[in-house]
Image (cartoon, rainbow, N blue to C red):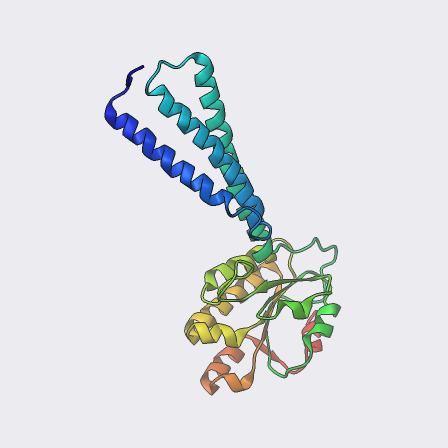
Length: 260
């Protein structure tokens, strides 16, 4: 039994065997270390990498012998299921994460009682009672998603600089994409309940453009955007700009009464 391929081919096969084998070992040690959906993804990837490692091992053996048709079929099968497994695991994980941070609204059977447009509210009234009266799906962009638990028509996006369960306040384009997707899917109302946090991580002009664009999408899709703010956190010029872009309301019930 002698070397049947050029030395560089053997070296390449050994390097790939080492890399894939180490990746499989690395993933194997992390099974059941994390919660779903990451744990399921690691399990699928580990199995796929182990199959690929077996395939690479057979490739190294092939460098020294003339493989039979059966060996070729085994190698093909190992690589086939390995690639399918990696693709499935990756797509499944991305889909799971998107469902958590980019929620789609439930199907609504009614047009609701809101008129399209943008509204500004700064008086501190409890928003939970108001949201329970909204006839249609609601998306709240917030720092405190647990406040809205129990409201069947409400979905939340957690704005946080850490963790895979939310979206960073600096990623305004991702928040906008989530809101637009929600409205296109039938969402009736977007509530921004973290204006001060967005201002903390971005300058006012960037946040203003983000909110103005979201309002335009709301108008074009027949939805409404409600911005909750603290007047004390704003300079007078900033407040005037917001009031020019969004209709100020003194009570949240006024938003419901805007329906013609």
